[in-house]
Length: 277
Image (cartoon, rainbow, N blue to C red; front, side, top):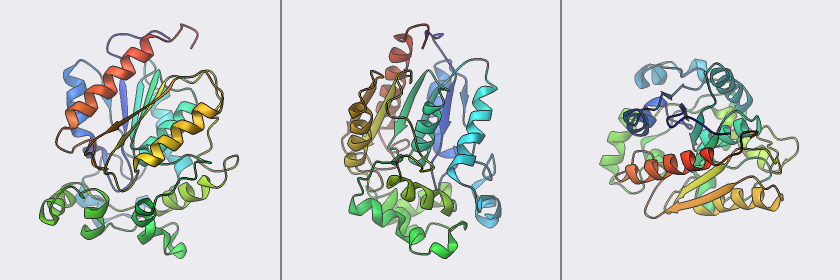
């Protein structure tokens, strides 16, 4: 499928974040003439961070399928297919949307595992422990502590600097999302995050990781790519690792290099697709 020079771009945020986390990339892409849509997950929508912290009730019980369906409705209302980019659990949702054929190119930025990808480094397990350790709160909306935020997002920063970012960006978790994501890794066919790795008509997919990311270390990104490539599908799946980058890759100093690479890759690969794609 060929595309206009400036197709729309949909950006999907991750867990513990809001659309505000994409301000950097969104502003850069808009300056290049793209219509950039940055919807919040259901329950977050366009609410301010402070409001979500004070009333996390709308986040409770919402799972990954509901979130993916929410984005599908938004995307289908657009005048043309977009480039879809997602960060962290937003990268999982991006892959679910790719499986539904909704974009012209996809970028998973430090994406979580989809169903059947079982790689689970110790640092990844640690990031989910505060939620997964209490199965009785499966449908809750647990806040992320400043200390855990420092390990998860701010591991390149001093604690004080990380705490300041927590104040501006961090919101409560969707606990159900975590439980569904973990359960799906061991249930490739029936997991909520199931995708058809062998789909032949999937638009190009790029997986990006950061060298010092505690949440999605490069081992996870490489395993995701391997899963797609071993399916035998001719659909394009590429991988890029950025040195010195953490899970805060979309706003960490030097984010421009990552954003520009992601957009250039997406535009070049979308343009290269045959008209029937």
